[in-house]
Amino acid sequence: MTQWSGYLGLILQGALVTIELTLMGSVLALIMAFLAGMGRVSRFLVVRAVSTTYIEFFRGTSIFVQLFWAYFVLPFAGLSLTPLQAGVLALGLNVGAYAAEVVRGAILSIGREQYEACTALNLSRWQGMRHVILPQALLVMLPTFGNNAIELLKATSVVSLISLADLTFEAQVVRSQTGSTLMPFLSVLIIYFALALVISWGVRTLERRMARGLDGVRV
Image (tube, rainbow, N blue to C red; front, side):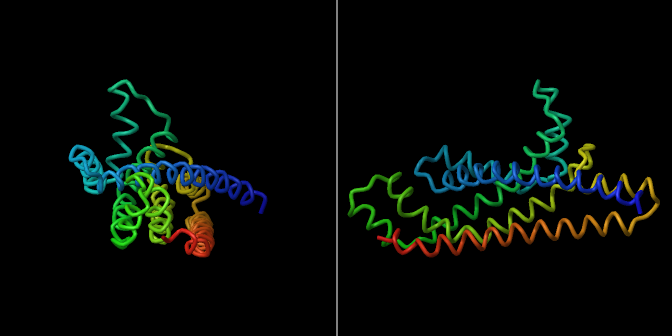
């Protein structure tokens, strides 16, 4: 029993790394999603082209390859990253590319009358986007953002390939030391599921709160 308590401690340490990856990766993904998503609806051709290239590249290539490039190839260009930094970079850029299309779709889903109202109120394009369009579009984005965050959580397991001691890596260590597959991977399964439930609950709570205040935003 004492032995398994020690192994459970290893898995919980891996869980902390997974949570850290998920939080930091989600922040980067959100930043990239809004930059690229809004870039896709920009009036400027260059901005649209750069945004589209980023989205298609990271959606069209494997996250395994992106992770290996971040960790093993970038040092040849003079940019050496720790395993954690490489994991956050690959996860954030990959999931951000998918979330960018969510941002674009949500912005385009807002009715034309909202844009016309912004013009009638003499709001600039940025003011209208910030104060009228985005608050409404964000409510549309949230459910899919929640799904994206859960996908990012599950994708953190790839960082075990570069020896970052996340949940999956520690489960493999415990399995190699004990010869048991059931206990470590059952523990990991439960922890991933619990973390996904926390994300889902958080997104639903935020969605309800935003929905209550939305009537005050519409013009």
